[in-house]
Amino acid sequence: MIKLIRCDERLIHGQCMQFIVSDYSIKKIIVVDDMTASNPILKSIFTSAAPKSIDVQVYSVSEAIDDITTSLVDESSTLLLMKNPRTLVKLYDQIEDLPKSLNIGPQMAKNGIKCVDYAALHPEDYEACEKLVQAGIRVYFNAIGASGTTVEWNSISKT
Image 1 (cartoon, rainbow, N blue to C red):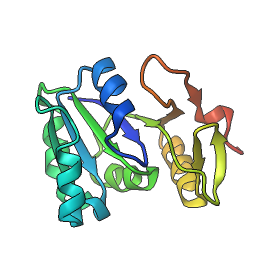
Image 2: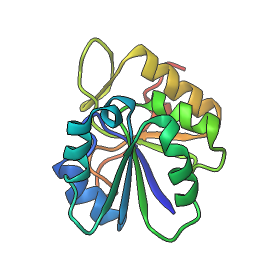
Image 3: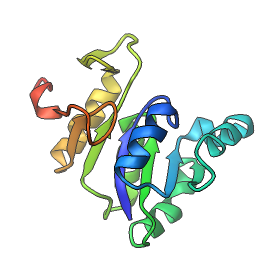
Image 4: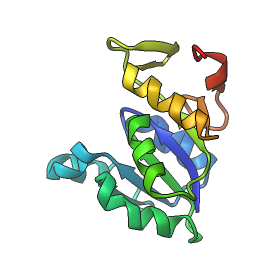
């Protein structure tokens, strides 16, 4: 079952492994990112970044659909991980039964809209979040997992 859907530009990294995996008892990570999936070196780096006891799969959006659909009903605690909320909009368009919650972790500050201390969203990502919220999906910011401070989308959005 999918325990957490998370956007984090760094994908799999130390905080993810230390807190997220522990807090949610994660046994499987599905990374969905077209660029990472198309680069054999990056794909190899991310599939080996987690402890050996965790099954890591890296997919493009189109490749991920079957595994995500299976993960909705199987017993393995799964983390669905992507770099940005635009990817999740694409997944929701194809998979209706996804959990109705998105955790946004660190997003690098570029020329974007600063939402919380550790996350800056580009206008396209902001629009994606608005679209998700309008579809009844909870969008919230949390950098380190269940034990960290949570900021709800509605408290920072323009609308």
